[in-house]
Image (cartoon, rainbow, N blue to C red; front, side, top):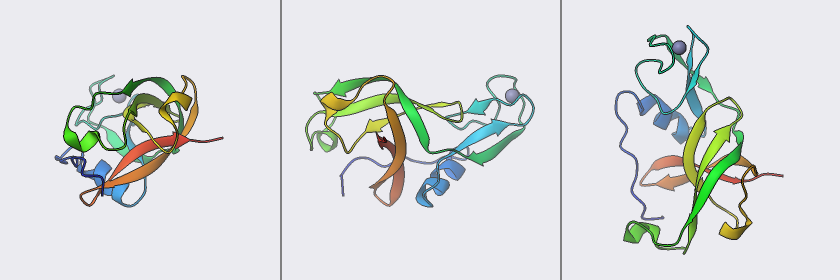
Length: 133
Ligand SMILES: [Zn+2]
């Protein structure tokens, strides 16, 4: 148990969170223009079409940018000391914000190859990144 707050799925995001609980990272693919979209929404942000389908993502990517958080925003995030908050470019062409875990914070670099792993919070599995070689 991490004690960290769990996400609260809504109508647009529930398919994403359900897939996480099955160990799958998913994203929305626009069948009208081909845009890969995250976070989940009811319309494509690129062309406005509602023609979105869910696809399983390749669970690999690279660190686009990151920060090391030394002053956690709440007590639940203070355990474990400094942590890494990163923007990760997934191989399928969308970007997500997540923590980089299972490595020392000072080992994280821009462009570092990562893969998706899941951290459980109150019964909800949350995607995180960890180093891959
Ligand atoms: Zn589109």
